[in-house]
Image (cartoon, rainbow, N blue to C red):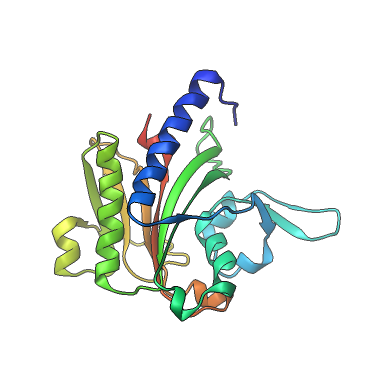
Length: 221
C-alpha cells in the first residue's frame, strides 16, 4: 500500500472524472459503500479465493469484520432491502479502494482502486450485451482496443461480441455468463464481471443482476 502524491492524485482524479462521465452518460447512478463491514453475511457466498484474500479481524465488541475486498456482494446487501418492482431495472455504479492479501504475488500493491457498474432487475440477454458493450466502450475511451472473453452461458448474441473461453474455476456467487476484458495483448484482464442472479436473493430481493468492475491502475498504467 502506498500514498498518491500530487501528480498521481491529479491523474487519478482525471481518470475518475472520465469514468463517471461515461457511466452517468449511460444512465448509471452512483452509490457509496463502507470500507469495513461485518463478515458473517458474506460467509456463504464468498469464493475460496475471496476468503483467502480478505483482511479480517475481531473488533472491540467481539464481531468479526472485514475490510472491503469485493464490491459486488456489498452492493447487493446495501440495495436489496430497498428494491421495489417500480425501481427496476436499476443501474448503479461505485468507486473506491479494495484491499486484498494476495500472498502469491509478493511486491504487488494490495490496495486497488476500482470502478464498476451493475444492472439490477434485468435477466435478459440484452442486459448481458449492454454490460459487455459498456465495458468495452470504457476501454476504448481510454485508447485501448478491448477483447471480451467469456465463459459460462453462451448464445449467438454473446459470441458476436466476444470470444468463448470455457474453464474450470471457483465461480463464487456467479450463476451464468462471466466475462473478462483484455487490452493490447496483455495477459491479465483490466476488468471482469458476469451475471449473479441469486446474489440479491441472499439479502431478501429475488432479482437478477449483472455487472463488471475495472481495476483502474491496470487499465491506465
